[in-house]
Length: 242
Image (cartoon, rainbow, N blue to C red):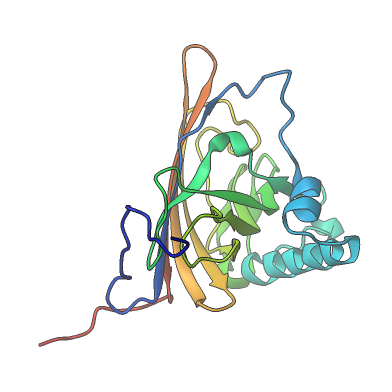
């Protein structure tokens, strides 16, 4: 009885790939609810990831190094004071962000909860900032954002032959912009299209692509529609069968 498989589907990875995941967020909530305080990065780092203060400080430095290398911006440099900010975050759980499909896994219809946190780099100068690194010569307008973070996916305990947690590191492939001013003003309608590099200790380097649309409803509640597809490895190609 203990090894009985559930009655929902098991899917193989696409040809040339070893793993894929499909994540969605469909939460509807009041962003101004005075009775709810969403958990922050302190909660994410200590309670979800289980890091101590030294590990958190090391992680922050990794984020600074990443932003400096990829985008040519060191958020700790006096040069960028008042022009960019680097902020810690945890995604509001009211998003209801979940994994609904994973290759070689039985994922229940209610999905697996995806906790998401890390650091965001945001251009706040009215005229934006000039980028360097891999984007030398490019301009990022005010509101442009990049992220360095972790997915901590809470696998349902009854799931057949799966670990308790799946941890996937992610890094923005390019700065992105949402016309509602995400994430500084999360109270309008807009779409965010975000490509990421993703990394798993066993699956290696993969690619992810997220499409997020916020819809402010007449009653003031916010609905988030997020679709995120991850594939491993990065750059896998369909084989030439001719």
